[in-house]
Image 1 (cartoon, one colour):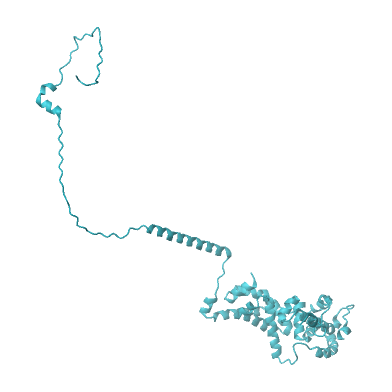
Image 2 (tube, each protein chain N blue to C red):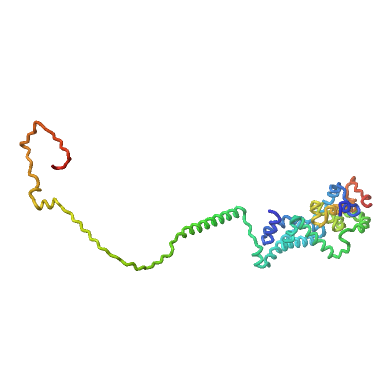
Length: 170
Length: 194
């Protein structure tokens, strides 16, 4: 149906624009006031509402039930859940890494090996020349007699002879 | 919180959410039902059934959610219940248009209206004389201040039709309430009759 047909005066007479602002009629209509709602109606409706949910089967209440949470509580719970999940995942990963280098099962196999024994005896003999010399001539190694410096006279002239060879005795 | 969210919670057993929805819309539904039916008892029944059906079958609102607000949905529900009662009451008159009948009534009404002392009662009676669809448009527009688009949603009609109903309702009210208009307010009764 086009616009002209729909708005033709015969089918659908259009009101004048000014009728939407008919103050006189509006004021007159305002004289008729609806009564207030009684508290008994409120009570009756709330009672009916409660009764409706009392008779509702439990399974349906479970299926269609919902819990309302304040936004901060919901956000905190979500963050805690995320943190716990992250930590749990991390722990699982480290456990895997630690458990990776576990030694393989040890299997002991005895293999008979022929033993070739070779006995080497080493004997070291140390010769103590001083002890031996003492045994041979005990007087030669006797402690020196007491030195008396009573008649000691310093020499008037010292002649130093340097002989090469260090401490070697000649 | 939005009506849609509250309705979800109320439908799952949250009584507080239901109380908030009820508090928001009870006045509108009750007044509309009362003015349509002109009976407190019937208006209470309609209000009760309206809210309970909303909770029993919230999906019926959800299917219309894209285009309807909860208040227009509730008005439509109240309207359907009221019209059902009108039909059940045995009103043989067609709901849509009683223009022929009204023309005859209007000619007899001024004398009776003049005798009514109470303006309020006169207005009530005049509105009761309107055909239900015109009455509905007038009540929603004048008393509940719904927009023409919202009334069109409630009535399931287009805006042009609603304007037309509103226009005719006002014409008839001007005739029926002519004795109560202040002097100087020319309501063009004769023009309306023509």
